[in-house]
Image (cartoon, rainbow, N blue to C red; front, side, top):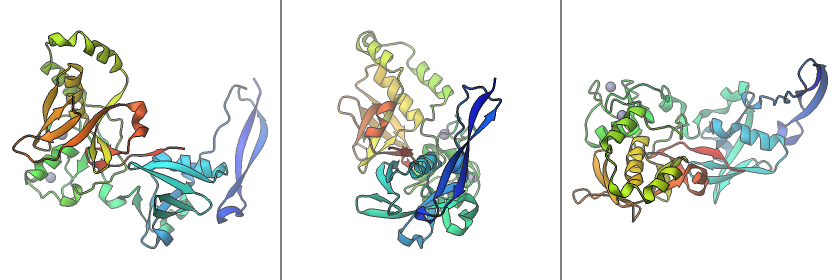
Length: 328
Ligand SMILES: [Zn+2]
Ligand SMILES: [Zn+2]
């Protein structure tokens, strides 16, 4: 069946902002079925949005891939601005002043053609340097510390061995070396880590979930009442988050699973080890703190529906900042 298909074409006028393009829609008669959607142009491959300090003298970063097309679309639709969540911060990008601001903090933004990217002194993506994150990937590889699929896989640059972030941080806190080769663990891996290649929705490894349910084989008597409604409700996706310096992080998915299993069984509290420290979680007070032997600071914790995520200043998982999302 013949149908009308619109073909998107761009040409460069160079009028607006020096780089703007104008778009023209060409109608061509093709053999495509009439129900076929008009193909959107694949712009993100061709233009990259960057941010940096004023004048970008110290180099700049590419915006996270999760917001590139959001920014590009707002720009092409002649909007004055758009908003993104950047590591828990609401930031406004203004296309008039070509800036990105949050409170008094202001950055410059730039739109460059991907073939010109090398001319922009770009250091990395979303605050994480290309070099430090090279080789980091979300993999199905097992962690040689917990023997489950790696959560927030973290590679030691010197030796290349990779583990879950919280697993290898436990070794670091205990002043232990790399468990595979006894190489040093650099402090830089654990001080305000920023990444761009971590998936926020990552699920707890299945084997761990199975271990966890074995732990709770016999339901408690109290499970019948309130918690059966909790069970139903728990079919919605929930995250457990904790507060750190005014921002929030999702728990490591394995810790999260452990908390969830206790919560669904109406336990008033539970104990878990986080990076080698024994933590007491109180579900009534919504707190997590170290036991009497550990002065770990008391933190607020929350169980939130995935759909409420935008209400919290969430930076990432287990102390690793990476979350960047479109807002409006
Ligand atoms: Zn592990
Ligand atoms: Zn190693």
